[in-house]
Amino acid sequence: MQMTINTTQKVTQILTTQLVQHLEILQYSINELEQYIYEKANENPLLVVTDAKAKSQYEEIMKLAGCDFKAFSPQHSASKNEDFNMIEMKLAQKESYEQYLLEQVPMHKNLSVIDLRILKFLIQSLDNRLFLDVPLEVVAEKFKTTLFHVEVILDLLQTFEPVGVGARSYQEYLLIQIDFDLFAPKMASQFILSDLELVAAQAMKQLSKKYKMPLAEVKETIQYIKKLKPVMPGNQFETTPYVIPDIEIKEMSGEWIVKLNRHYLPAISIDEEYVALLKNDSDYKEYYQKTMNDALVLLQGIEQRDKTLYGLARWLIQLQEDFFTTGLEAIKPMRLKDLADVLGVHESTVSRAIRGKFVQVPHGIYALQSLFTKGLVNSSGKIDSIMHIKKRLKQLIETEDKHKPLADQQITNILCAEGIQISRRTVAKYREEMNIVSSFNRAYG
Image (cartoon, rainbow, N blue to C red):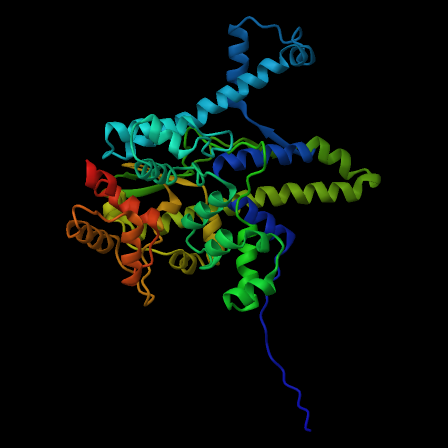
């Protein structure tokens, strides 16, 4: 036997702690970033966070109310009104998410009076996790309609923000997340539908044998499922009653201007007096270096987030100028990979950058993620335009059996068989945008 020694080159990327924190900051929406800044300020004595606007407004209100700051006792107030404050907070939160969901209803203009009544009832029947807390049979009986009709309206509610609203179980909550994800592994839904216990036990060999999948692919799917957003008992959804756009794009003198929405964020600075105190004390040398490094990582992370969002906005202007002037009907096909190649970053970085963020343009506010549509890549790897898909969808509905109209899932199956990879929710979205009613209303409306 002859032994040989071969040398190979392998490039690997090691994520430093600093880079990991920068990626974490990048994925935050403007509301999440504000909370993160305050959390870091509480942990790090070198950081000074100033929210002058909020502070001045609070002081002005307290003066108008005739309150004496010195006489105010937080401890006494908390003990006296603890139960009341808890109830008040719960009621305020319920009003908040109900209002947020109701504000999304007018976007769907082809709903009948009974559709609207059912939809509003479903919204009012959500629990504190935004899970549906009433059986569909009860809803059907209440409104003297069919179970299928109620299911159609629930499908519509489950397309609302935040992702997962209207789920009836933890399993369905996970499935909704997968349906909205551009890069979900193809077997993720099946694993959750049939083998959630095996996924929880990380029984990779059993899953590999059952589905005849490579172990590496099974492992990747399980890791993906584990990273889906969990719902812990008693926790509340993070709802945002009023959307604050992270980016504003407007036209001035024939040019498109990009503005990052920083005025909602608190100002951050370094406490120079505390720096001088720690820096000159040898007992606190290690502590000083750690806190200073953490402070700089935060500031650099926010700066890097701004640069990435700005670059993303400039790229959108170059590619989607028709969208900014006309609207969604003029949007061109685009993928996360296209943007990743332009910015010179990984697709996962782009995915973090657009997560939970909104852009304000002359004709409205849009979720960045909504501009990257899932139903564009066909089986050959090429990209079909949205207009092409809508045209085919309309053709299917125009030629359907009028006594047995095609449900959204049936349309989805037909399009997928034709090579257009699209989800049922995207079909429903396109149908709504073309003002075509649901199959129920086409049959009985």
